[in-house]
Every structure is written in structure tokens, then in C-alpha cells.
Length: 368
Image (cartoon, rainbow, N blue to C red; front, side):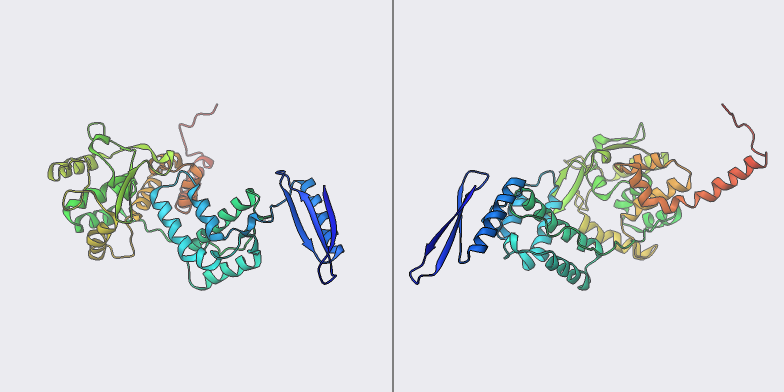
């Protein structure tokens, strides 16, 4: 319940004090110069408390900068590289715009204008979406914790994602790249191309997880470099932990590689020129980029070897479930979303096979 008390200032002007007890049991008050405003406020507070929508008027006064720092510190399950990326985005794009503002003061129209400005500056649509996601996540947590009545970042129009063209190398092109690169990394290139493993997965591959006798490679760890420090840990998803069968030719390549470049103290299969851990940025700059320029020409990322592997599997008629397993995708939908455009080419082959059936030329079909 709330009460309204009238008092008079020294000048004889009336003032009205609204007193009420909030849901936590704390007594609160607010002053007004007009009786109508006091009545309206008291009625609004009562309605909010009755509906369970009451917001502590002091809570939303915390600045976005303070709140997002608390919010980020409470998030769990992120890899060091993800933490570093999010921290960079917040410092670069979110804090300059809203860091000094009270959380409760941020309006939807401001966020829409901010998003539009990020896009106008030339940020990639995926980057704009990620920046907005981090702000929206913090504001959603503020809403859930009762600091604000609603998340002002909801229902904001975001730029459409651009389709990034994947480059799939042919087996001949893969071999050309493998021949052009520093001999120490020939097996690395071929392993990426014929297993579909990510760079971090191969950089963390240890001899104990490579079974050449049974032609199997086990992905159980990945390497990530954050601010110059290498971190080894489990892959990003459970599905990424997997066993991948190796072609016989690749087994021979790996055997020669290990005989020529023995693993160091950490037992890593692929190492840097000094025998230490392999670092992605250094590898790209010193070895991958020159090899691409000298062979198939750019643009071509190391990750395109993974796309090339998927294209080979599709061209050879492998079931999407096999592709999902070898690439370590969490679901078959992920595989279809990534490579569905390549599967379309198999539709004509399916139609030709149906022609055989319709024309009575297909034999050996068993019907239940």
C-alpha cells in the first residue's frame, strides 16, 4: 500500500510525498509538487507491484559500462579466444557509444541509429550482428535482473548476412599447394584436405591420438592463440570430438612426416620451424600465403581445405551424415546449411537414376 502526505515549503508552496513499501520490504518515497502527479505515481507503483512488474527506481541508474563488465564476468563456458574477441568488441564499439549512459536511459531508437551507423561505417554484416548481440545480451540480463522494464535492443533491424564464397580446391590443386609449401608443412596441408580438420585441431594433434596402423586420427583438443599465448583445450562443441578415418596414401605421408620431423617434448605431430608449437598467424604469413601465391593463387584460406574436403565427399556421393561426422558438425542441418549448394549438383544424377527405373532398365531392385 502507498500513502500520500501533503506538506508546505517555507514559501508556502504545497508538496506531496508518496510513501510505499516495495516487494523486497524496503520503504521508499518520492516527492511531487502537484497532487495529480503524486496520485498518478502512487497508482502506477501499486499497479506495477500487483502485476509483478515493479522496477527499483535506483537499479537502472548503473551505467552500461559498469553493468556490462559485471555481465561479462558472469558468463561461463567461453574459450579464451572468445573472451578476448568479445572484450575487444565491447571496448571498440559498445563502450564509446553507451558506456557512460545509465542502463535505464538507453532507448530503442538510439540503438537502431547506432546499428545503422555501424553498417554505414563499412563493418561487415556479421560483425554488426555480433556487436549488437553483445549489447543485447547485457541489456537482456539487466531486464531479467529487474533493472529495466524491457530490453531496448530487441526487435532491431540488422543487416542481412553476406554469402561468403567458399573455395573448393580440386585434388590436383591440393597437391599443387602441398608441393609449393615448405616441405615441413606438406603433410599438414594434405591432412587438412583429406580429413577436413580445422587448423587448431591439427596444431593440437599429438602422436598418441594418431593411429597409423588402424588409419585413425582422434580429434580431442584444439589450439588457440590469444594475445600471443597458446591455449590448448577441448574443441568448441562435443560433436567436434571425433575419430576420423585416414586414406592409405595419407597414412604414408604422415609416416614420412614423423620420420623426418619427430615430435618434440609435447608430442605434437605438426610443429613450427623451431620444433615448438605451431602458431596460426605465423604459419599464414610465412608459409601459407607464399605457397598460395606460388601455386593456385588467392584468395584461398587454410580453412578452404576443409571446404575442399567436404566437396570431395559430396562429389564421391557420400551421405550427409558421413560428412557431418568427419567435419564434426553438431547436426546434419549445419552440414546441409554449409554445403547444400554443392549437394544440388547430385540432383541431376538422381534424376538420371530414376530414368533408369522408369524405363525398366534398372535391374536388381528388391521390393518389400
